[in-house]
Image (cartoon, rainbow, N blue to C red; front, side, top):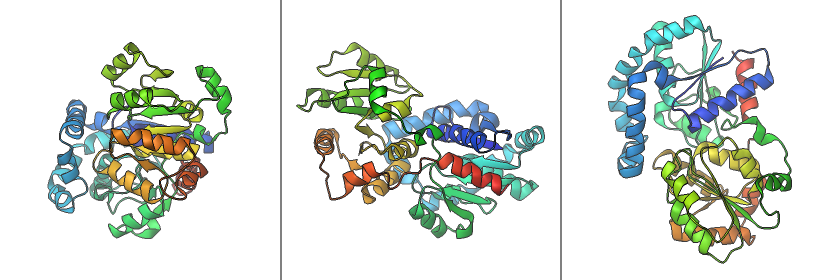
Length: 367
């Protein structure tokens, strides 16, 4: 099995790693290779492209909002995509020669486009799977050569069908998350490991892998509010935020983390999470039955995730930093902005904790 993603320490990478674990659980004899497709095919431009993307979403998000899933832009970019995809063919051919894959699974649309173009122009015996890591699909995923798509839910399935994908090619199996999220744990024991009080609510604050968003302002407000709580703050790759956190004195107990692989444990110890609505993070929160306060979504994919989760009454949305404390108060008090929201958040009604193993089993049965 060949799994392609883009960008290290990203949701797409996390999904690829989770799928690898899923394959190895379902069939320990299977050989799985995970590759950062952008780095493999275009090593010189990977760093620059990622920096430009981060600059746009941080400084001029209106540009990303304008371009995201816009049919006219998708159509106008066809020529460039064809040129770019063909530039990857020789390396891809070498890769497929060295690693004879029965199936190729893509957790991001860019490598999915390359593999689709290769199948169309040069043929290929492998099955191609597109595994979406957000709750709403976009048009850059749509290629005739993809054998199957895996989506988060029925709404995503219907939207992908409206974009031209035959329904028989779509499976609703969830966003792939690490299989450890399906395991029952003792929250009191985990709190003790981190030195957290078992009787005081614990709030987890995250900003994705890059520690984006107004986290400083959120922490200040939570620290100064009257609500009893202890906090766990994940700064990700944001070194400036981490330095600010560790050098500041707080009234409440605050644990600070850099980029960490302990998210499952931190979620298990928490009563709620304040986060950007990335597909992986929100899918993990749903699997844990962890109430969410969503803030600062990236235009495009995260804005659509927010719409989906709010419509499904699976999260509360804070329009700004000043709305965070009221939302936290509402959840900790056992209330909800509208009937059923808190119950849905805790009840795992949208959760697919075994998604990676379920996807692996499906791919192995259809390779």
